[in-house]
Image (cartoon, rainbow, N blue to C red; front, side):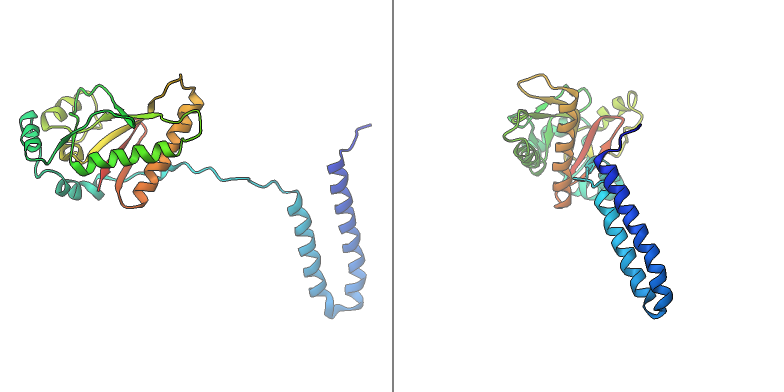
Length: 242
């Protein structure tokens, strides 16, 4: 003989009780037809309240911020060009020229981020874009305070490109575009796979860090500080500073 759990018994009693009430109400409705709609509404409301007590409730809603960031080049390419040093960089000579003019500044790793080996780009940005990275790193690490992941650094995989480096990149990456915002010194790519901390990261921790980085970028994007594109094939966030 199967045993019936306490919860199932409670559900059976409730359903049986409500069934009895509904059956009894049929005689009442026939005797007082003018009260039938009002009595019916009360019974339906009571039945719904009893069902809601046993319906599973979601404790919190998980939001994938990465999927919410898909800004197209057409949205930002014009403003990115205007925020740059004033023209496209054809080679390293142009970079040196704009550095001497104070329109570009060198990017070096610090307590917030590390630089990947850059075969097709150069570590230079406009002063505003360079300051943006430190603000991003500060906000990112604030979200990790008092956890075993605090002080984790993210990785910049690509920064400033020249027309020559883009030609070389297109031979390897078909998704690379000629009129890229990377030419303006306002853009950089952040890996959501490579993070650096004192311990070896598990896959679950890497996913958590990706979510925290995406949430931080989403907040700064919402504040009008940048555009962001989630690039699944290149495993990075393409960021354009406003």
